[in-house]
Length: 138
Image (cartoon, rainbow, N blue to C red; front, top):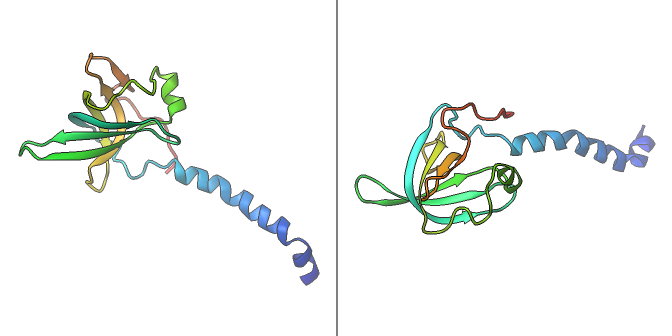
């Protein structure tokens, strides 16, 4: 048995990696941190739009009722997925006043998952508010 293990250590390591990879992929795509049963409306000024893989990000400066400005980090889909929905890398620009509908973080931090965004010209990008989110593995 010892000889078998010594000869096949590389093969055993590859098998373990092959078994672990699907679990790692599913873990990456979990949306468990977002409360997908709630939607929140945010109005603010875009600080930055990050057109990056694996997910896009909108950094949104939101002024609260007390006048305090808070930065929100809003996670979007992948650039590839957004391109298929009509998005481009320059569609959201720094300084744009937008309205974002998000599924907020469960822990109450200033962040969420993008449902849709209404641009200054009134164009809305994303899925309809209140529609079922895409299925996820949690």
